[in-house]
Length: 587
Image 1: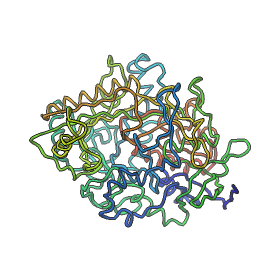
Image 2 (image 1 turned 30 degrees about the vertical axis):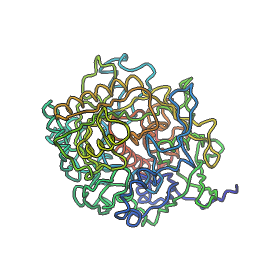
Image 3 (image 1 turned 135 degrees about the horizontal axis):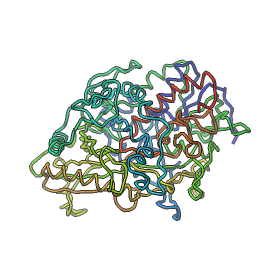
Image 4 (image 1 turned 60 degrees about the vertical axis):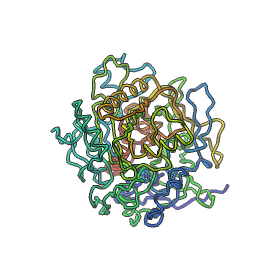
């Protein structure tokens, strides 16, 4: 295929999601000519997501209209190194986005900060418990950046996305109504917290009976009309459901489509190219500098975009795969425990307790993706771990997201799996049930990693990314412990029946769990164990920055979007204030 070489630009950004749009806007504001390349199609919220079509559950949830097309590119998966990986043929455990805005269009809006402990997991665990608390093959590590360094950028992202919440730790002062376990924040949230739902109120009252401190979960679903720092106006959430896995018809959910792109699209220094699938970052003869990226457009043409600066800001799998395909950094070898690209793949450990009632009714159609009540007593290192046999933890949450009727059909234990009795149970308990979910962290291990599959290829003939991952004893013990705490609270609420479901057995890629994949191009202070430095800059190719959840050395119990956004703001400042003034390795 003939490759057409295009006119050089200052910066090319791969991916127009949460991280990519922020980077594009900040660099364009700094005077750079920026091109954004997005493999998905352009969407127009006023047309594509108009009522009532935006609530088409078959289109968006069941048939994955805005999700990665697995017939063109997928991943292969296995639980262990001695197994043969097979392709994921249907969307299951996670849903990588494939449209302008990426998975940020489809998220529910829950916006956590990671705990200070999350950034210094290994050093803090060793200091408090000693080396025997960490599994021998656990490769979790400190990030090379602290919570205090990232705090101003969390604040920047929260105001950009209009996050609503109540500060629980304002400059070190613990305040009622917020999360008392969060790291100190420099100012209050830009919007007030969500009003609790009936289910959330029941959970809060039962939690308080145990001495816990429930709070409204921070969320980027607007609790009032809001103008963000880019002077973009977002509407107020109407609690209409159809939030997670859907775009917002009311323009009330913080996403790249509402908070950044309308301002970015008008910028004279920026050009967006959708349906541009990047297949390689091209390096110079010394392999020390990126000179361009090669992508395939909607007509099947292969184009080369030269640039002085290359930024990978796509999904975890895509960032890692592009580095491997391009020869940026040494691929990870789990046998020798050497190399960095693909190292420390991690996920999130999710359990649940479902409560069923005969005497209480909940409006299953109303809600929002971030309409939640939480407690944080069992997250991170917020509780004593000595003698428990695991590190880390997670939060407990009741999410009143609005129950999509095709997707959700909870029934109590003992219900037949099909037939008339199953149908009666679904109809009866659809609006007489809710869940207390546990969202737990996940440590990284020597044999959990991403690499290029030796057998399977994508539509362009390039190797697919291969995932090797399974649940380990640490995560299983943690999930049982936290889910049992949820069950104690559930019993205090008084349901007629309960279903308790912690993580156990082997990890399965089939049922949907969370979109919180992480690692593969992790950040750190040591180039022997990290692919990028604390500024998200490649150790090996200094004019390449890699931004996203791919940078997490292990996964927190908290959802990743707030941290991805904060890292994008941090990297943008680092590039503008340091790299552009004198292009070089920043560490």
